[in-house]
Length: 215
Picture (cartoon, rainbow, N blue to C red):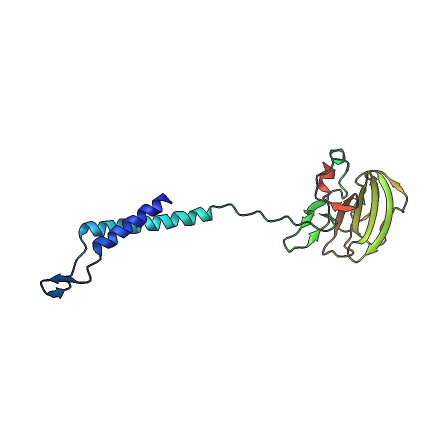
C-alpha cells in the first residue's frame, strides 16, 4: 500500500511538470506557448508507468496465488469409504478367480457411474472359488449382476460373486464353503460386456472396496 501512494505522488508530480499551461499572459496579449516535456520529465513518466504496470502485475499474481477451496468429496449412496478394520485385512485367503486379471476397481468411473466392486477378467468357464471360509446365503439372478452367489464370511462381511454362467453354481443356500472351494463358472450374464467376475463386498450392509480384504 505504501508503494502505491509513492507511485501516485510521482504520477501527480509528473502531471505538474509535463502538462502545458492553458494560457500565459504576456503584456496584454495572451498566448499559448508550446511546452515540450524535458528529458527528465519523460524519464520520470516512463519510470512511473513501468512501476505502476509492475504493481498491477504483482497484485494479479497475488490473487492468482491464493489457495482455492478443495471440492467437497462425493460419496455413493449405500457405499462405505472408511478404513477397513485391521482385523479384516487379509481375511480373504485366495483370489476368487485363479489366473484372473484385475481390470476395474471400486468407486466412481470417469463417466460418473459408480462401480460397486472389482472386475476380474477371465475366459468364460473359468472356475470361481470362495475367497475365504463362509456360508452361502443366496443364489439368484438379475439384470445387473446376472447369475450370482452371495457368501457370508462372518463378522458382518458378505461377498458377492456375479456374472456367472447361468445355472453354473455348484453350491446351495446354507452350505458351508471353505476358502478355495468352487462356487460356479465365469460368465457374462447380466450387465457385462465380456466374461469376468464382478466381485463385491458388503461391510455392515454397505458396499466397500474389496481390495483391502486381500491384504
